[in-house]
Length: 417
Ligand code: PLP
Image (tube, rainbow, N blue to C red; front, side):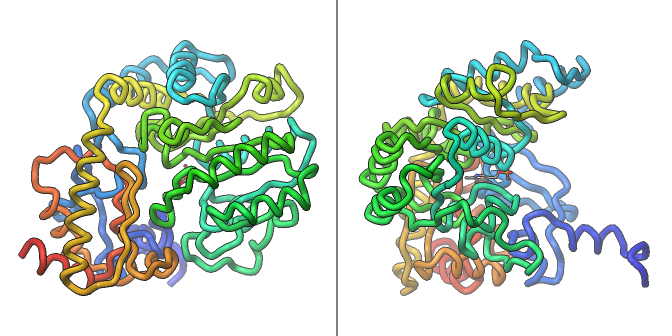
């Protein structure tokens, strides 16, 4: 049978986003039936059989207010009805820009793009343009986006979320990239001692999100801040995951360290495709038309995504959920910690605000691959059971996909059943 005879069902199973290790794929790999979501509402996902699940990772992060929030829907509907205009700034875009500038300490000027990946690519481009230097320092396991230069150069399997690279797509810009260990202050000092004048930027996740929650030490963040300042390099916080999540102003507000540039995605678009990057005016002024660094995108600042993002930031500011998220994360962390301990499962809990991970093997990559053995039924039941029906669970990064079936079942036995 040729490709055209592949059913929509099969095609969807092949092409489900997130690749082989996404929880949806993992469910399919275990039970033989992939998880097809028909609709989502608040904290819940409903599959095509009408079964309900807690969306424990807020669809990879954006849905901090939950799915189908009425005010976000209204904003989107209104914007769509007004039609679209690209290439000239709109009032809605300016409003969102102001909200971002108001919230994020490092951002004096901002540009809207279509995703977190684009935000990171653009920020690096501008940093290289602004400094006239090429080298970029990154940290193993930090995820910055899905293009070769970001993925592969990040230098570890972790950077591709555990999926092996195929030979055709290996080291894009690796020669310009130094990959160091996260939280390794001496490593950072040595890299600057050797390459200081060539380093355009240091980019880091100010709490690592995608491989599980890895919290930075203050000494590490401070060293990154001091060394970049001393050497005229640009410090970029990739706050695509942490922005508006670990605090309204992101990790930079939480830790009190202000980078030169910041990248945003996920929450900033309220569930629609949108990213942003910004920073000090003197750096952002390097971008066309004020400066010489080209950066543009046909659909950048599209009004529907801008409306969703703008409504989301307004709601988050009016009713900050951060304290509640932290309490919920504490409760979950304690429950999981006790359950794992009493089941005799070695583990560590990592937490920053409402970002939470239970590491079973201490190794994010191995833990991630444990997801392949998740059981869909147990998975849904566990999170539902612990959090309880009707409890507002506005997302947060419960890196729950690291549970193996065995561990999950043990925990259910211990805590719920
Ligand atoms: N940077 C970080 C820290 C992320 O978590 C992600 C996505 O998970 C990205 C960049 C890429 O964003 P996107 O998937 O919107 O392209």
